[in-house]
Image (cartoon, rainbow, N blue to C red; front, top):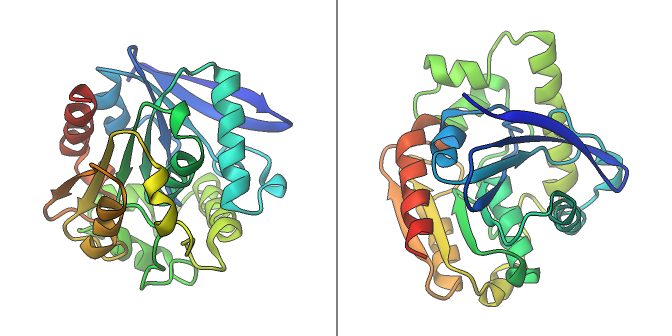
Length: 257
């Protein structure tokens, strides 16, 4: 899969960025798992767009967690990153934690982006399940529709190598700094969704145990003109379980707006 990896300095935070494809820009905001690898989902998007996949501070190969205490800090980090990368009005595509981040960004800087696609986003209500106390096997059961599949084991192994386990722990620590209390949501965000003035897509996973349909529907209801797509039978990690279908939904949405 053709892509490149770079490291850039974002106001003292060394940031890992994967980039591939050509065309209008997409900025992908990853979830709590810190999925910093060139996955089939990104490759499918890169057939039509230039895709940027940065690591949030403290995730994967990115530094700077000590400078990030809140979602507001992370939003400001991404305003700086977009400026440094010189990305002109990217479409924001975010999964789970990244979907919440994309929504928070769009309520503040809607003029800086061209479109918004949130995939199984948290952020409006606290999830029922506790991701912070879960074991690797319990986490797989939360986010994959087939938790014992080879795919699920590739992402979250019961016996990871040291580097993978280190990244797993780093992602959990970084997520806790952003979403420990209140738990993975901002009670003010729902009342701010009216500020989002760009075309918006909400993708729900039909078998999602972490983010139910009703939560995704809150985003749809709160954003004027938002479109809604459900991928039946998919778990929370829908772009990894169903990369072609998820990418097709995003591509079709962006092509029509």
